[in-house]
Image 1 (spheres, rainbow, N blue to C red):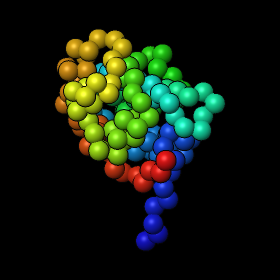
Image 2 (tube, one colour):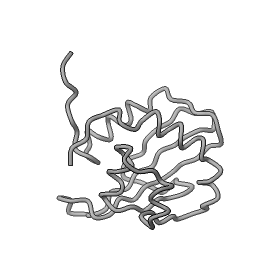
Image 3 (cartoon, rainbow, N blue to C red):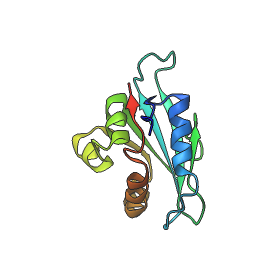
Amino acid sequence: MAAEKATEFLSTAWFEQLSTTLEGLELEGPALVIGQVVTGVPARAEADVEYSIRLGGGREAAVVPDSVATADIVLVVAYRDALALATGAATVGSLLGEGGVKIRGDAARLVEAGALLEAAATATTGRHRIVT
C-alpha cells in the first residue's frame, strides 16, 4: 500500500481532501454552519483564510472554501491554533480556555451543537497527513 501523500494545510488539495472526507457523512443533530477564519497564514498574500462546514440538519456534511457568509457561528483562530485543531492536538474547548479562539455569532449555538461537533471532529481529525 502506498504511503498517503501529505497535503499543505489550507491548500486547495487540503480542502479537496476535507470535502472527500465529508462526502456521505450525515450527522444527527441541529443544522449548523460553522465558519473558521484562520489568521496569519504563512506565504499568503491575503493572510487570512476563510471556510465553512455545514453539519447536521439531516443533510450531508459539506465544506465551503473561501466563505463564512452563511455561517451561524464563526471561529477566528491563529494559524498555529487552526493547525492544532485540524491535527487533533487541540480542541475548540481547550483553545477557548486559553483565549486562542474568538467567536463571532451566537456562542450558545456552539454549546448546543457540542455532540455534533464532536462527531464531526472524530470523523475528520487525523484522516490525512498535513504539512505546513
